Length: 288
Image (tube, rainbow, N blue to C red; front, side, top):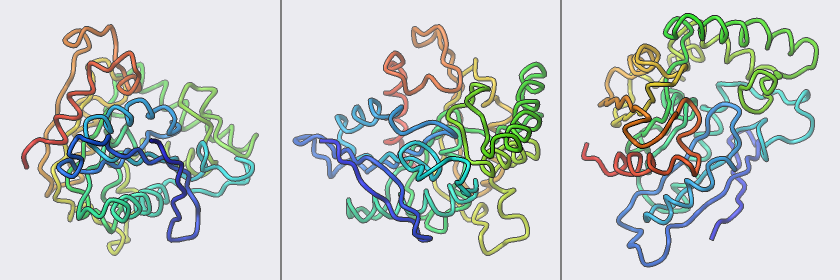
């Protein structure tokens, strides 16, 4: 049965989440719990059917909203001072600790959609993650995208969003088809990180005591679609280079091979794309 939960970050910020226990009778203790980390600007509700399916496979699952997004937004968006580094350094850290405490497991697995699988190098408790399954996960580096989409993405994140921040006080990403509207600083930093490459490494430049990228050792498996304009072979490689000690594997998935017309960046978790879900579940079980 799905349970609404509150996750309290180290800085006192409360996050809204949902915990889905493994279905009874499935020997849940033999399966690792899963922390399901959303993409930028995507609410936790989008992942609930997939989370329920994972629970049916015998996994305890926790999904949540980052600060400033969905049910974790408190008050007006234009008053939210959340930053993108806080999504990793505070929110993912707290969600991971909550799941570890709730399940009593020594380690849990992480399924990260896009940004959800990019920030392990910001987590001081990264060693409590047994493995990462990244879905459409990459650095989002503009220079790694095909030219037409690169121009569109650069204009949206580096021109339209900063202008919108000045006019509205928040990042109007919904107008650009980039998920929910975001806190001003989150939207601004998103564009800066995509322009620079290396994604979350930009949060810890010159801050060695907060930079854990070189210490990340867990296996990282990335799935990305052939029709994904954001997670391309180049942007996936740009992200994975930031984890030099990790065991890395990449799967480039063609929609037609799974009876689908398209997958893109977002559709992995839609009910219409359940044919893809066993791929992700199997990656949770893959040997180190």
